[in-house]
Length: 429
Length: 138
Image (cartoon, each protein chain N blue to C red):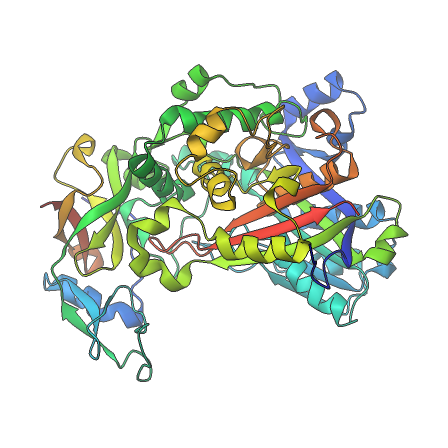
């Protein structure tokens, strides 16, 4: 198939990450698995003397080192984040990793929407690379959600989950107890169950299979904690129809990567991971009169068409998928919307065991947002890099050449929520 | 009882909606030219618009609709909702078309289902000088 002129022209040359693992658990894992490469990325949570901006600078430093470059080589930088969300500003810190690392950047700014961090960062960086305004761009994002939500004063107040209390203009839901992302996202699950008869066990099957991947990744929060259907059904029902196990974990951590031309990436020590295609979908335009139809699918169609078209690939070319799995319904919806199965059959597709280890469509091999670490789409992006470099250790998909990485999210001014979908196709040249 | 829940942010452009609620009127934006209904403030998507929201007028609406999806919070994520559990948070497609979200009250959580017809219930909260629109079974 024809490919877009930019397809394969730019590549990821370096990856840096730090991921928080609860302190005692981390000590145990280090003792059990001395020298395990994934644990090189682990830091103890809570992060105590550090904050998200510091994690981000450290991830950036590691990505530059991983690319075999020096700080003086970096001439562009992008900070990626969740954008305007309830109670959070556009950026949560007033310092920047280029300042901390002394990067001689020609440009630095920030972008992102919801969970669409890395892919939107790549889109931003590509414009500078393509215009010849930068040679090596570092894209980095971070969060300190575990530390924040485990603070004693926060816990004592009875606050659970992500800590973002305030309302902002345009935000409608908090007054009605829309206090967690699950209050928005579970609407997809309820509606899908209603229209297609998707069962509680089918949602559980997704959580269990992603958990099985996490058990192969010592960096994952849920490493060492395999789950059965009995465990799932017994998992506390927080926001019905969602059990605790239907919801993503909260994590401290940061991911950074270096984007450059494929030629320059080939001169770096690690195997390049090429950007083959990028697509973007947004449901905002039609949301209000689509009514119920909006709640059984994600705006994948245009994103897929663009990304797959640029890359010249079809769905069967994808060796490993990294879906944005903030909740279990998103797994079902994306399998359907990309065409791994027909609309309404996502539950049965997962129930057949397809996305877990040994399945036909290995997905979220890090353990995903559900069971590994929630660093937005940078969780899937970092995992795609590990897989395509052949560095995924126990969870390596044999001969993985092409990986899909998706993002999901947007402004959550309920009921108009999570309108975007990003689609990124990465490949080993 | 003291109001401890998050206080709605009343945007200037949405003031007529909130003023309507105080008078127990449920107003939506209606296009003067083609009759299309909107909530919250939106330009009419069907044709050119006058500046700002000049093509639309806040107009009395039915205050009725049906549930298109919902969830039931059994474990409160914030202390202000601890005494409310289990509570139902629902997406309601209004009879005029737009979608709004609110709590479904005055019925057991187990009785709530998709396609359930509902209507607005006004709760005047003097403490915050606002009227909050909840919904109940029709």
